[in-house]
Image (cartoon, rainbow, N blue to C red):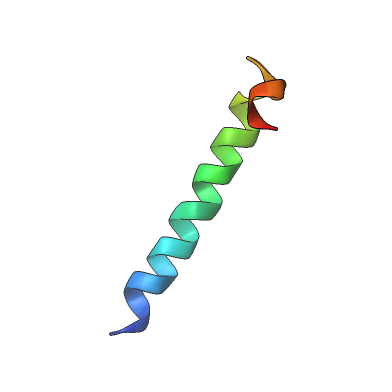
Length: 33
């Protein structure tokens, strides 16, 4: 399936973003900007 890697990549990026957004406010939100 050629679309599998793309879908996985998209999901992985979304999950990573969620983790990042949850962790950043705790530490330093200014670092993200």
